[in-house]
Length: 217
Image (tube, rainbow, N blue to C red; front, side, top):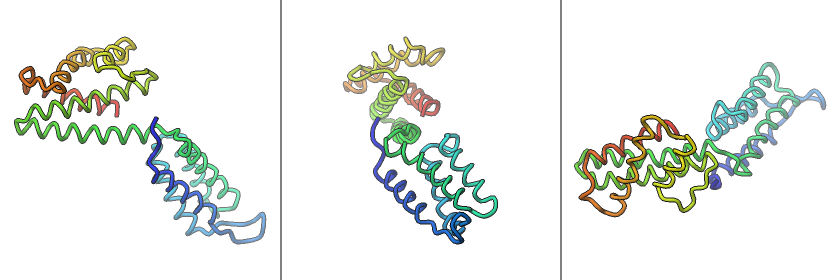
């Protein structure tokens, strides 16, 4: 898996430092956090963890639970430390690149741009351009999908990737039949065999790619 963007790790480091510097007032053992600074930090921390891991992730649920508990009355030192600990658990996975949702989301956005451009080209009568864009998006998406399911597809052709996915039972039904025809369109597009491509063929790979991305990315 590729490393997370540097700005994501940098933001986690910044918020970790900010959380460590939230001032406490009161006597030792009975200290409470400055509420304004705590709430500012907590809001940013929750937003970041949700964006990277998702709101249904254990990291977000843990942090959200601790923040909710901390704000039920005074934010005492013990509860502040629990919030810091939950945030640092998320940060540890970010620092070690053990994050899966963000990479999938980013890939989906890139593929989505390819599909949008392909649809526009197709509508303008440039089905050759649309075929290249959709084929590139689908081939990369299929390889990422296979990798996500612990399959080694390094150096494999699209035909081989499709065959591997089918043998593993990762595609089936109508999708299985449609996917079998996609390498033919891809090969024609990537080798500039334009006479082998019709607007209907290209429309099928654009539509299939869009649906595959919606379901898996």
